[in-house]
Image 1 (cartoon, helix red, strand yellow):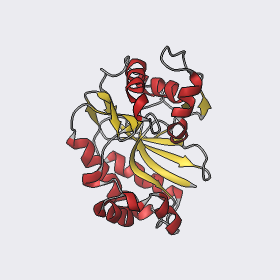
Image 2 (cartoon, one colour):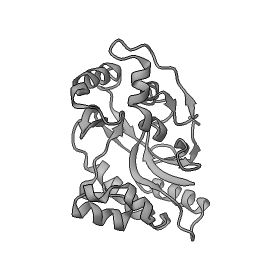
Image 3 (cartoon, helix red, strand yellow):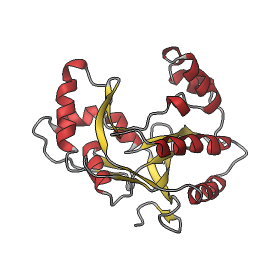
Image 4 (cartoon, rainbow, N blue to C red):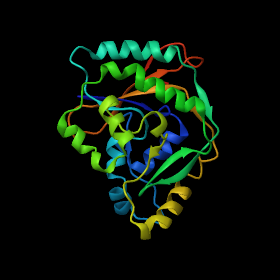
Length: 239
């Protein structure tokens, strides 16, 4: 079992519904979703393009997937998620935009948000005691030879290379896209997500995702409302 601390909107949120339609899977229910017809790409092409993103579910990484330290239990993690969420305030991102990051595409904030970066930093620090040390095989999967010296240090110390000043909030929508197809994919994504791209996004909860076994799809286990939103912890899908 692996756990991950992500941000994702609630299951009833319009952004969640559009993103689930694009990815072809709902991470709350783990149900496959039939995509609407797309004039720019057929379903088989989108299926291949979204293979990895679909398995991880629609999310933004705050604390990358980890196995529990042998001294910790799931109940301990949940208790601290409730505590942490109650002590950190919700906030709003004015809107998201489609952005190319290296060879793949994602949704990112349209403008810098210090509250978002601060929240990500605190999640990494606060929950690191729950993380088991990475094995040599896990470290190699991160291809350390492609990382900077600072990123390798972060990987060794925090289990993930893209934390703190290397962190960049993003909600992955595709796998790698070849250069000759990038403009077409950008147009396709901007058209598909157009109904929600001008809407604000409430960062109002932390989400606990789980991976039952290696290679299994990540699913939303539960949501933990941030302060100044809801007063009590709700299980995933309960609105």
